[in-house]
Image 1 (cartoon, rainbow, N blue to C red):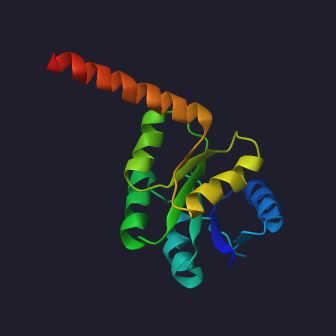
Image 2: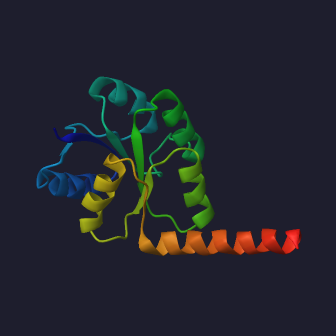
Length: 151
């Protein structure tokens, strides 16, 4: 059974590109409607019951980190894949901390959309290689700081 993807992005060219990619997939189907505003999100989730929400963090009236927190609190079943241009690793980490299942940067290769959706649909977390390395480095540096305090 195909996983249903709800796209929440207010940029028509992005939505069309994602639609074209998903139309060529055997495992995923894009819900015909897409969310253009954060105020519409609850209605669309209740109406279509998607498996994965592909969420642009620049969506009007979303609320950033608090928006994801609210979505995950209301719809625990829903996997949220953040789809945005993120330059700040701290913000990316906060998205994961509040329940996002991954971060897909809009600057990545188009083939990564399917890879990210597959990983998230199986319960994994998707981070691109650059972000993963940077977050691991930050984690290692934090561990070093903690270890030096304990000594």
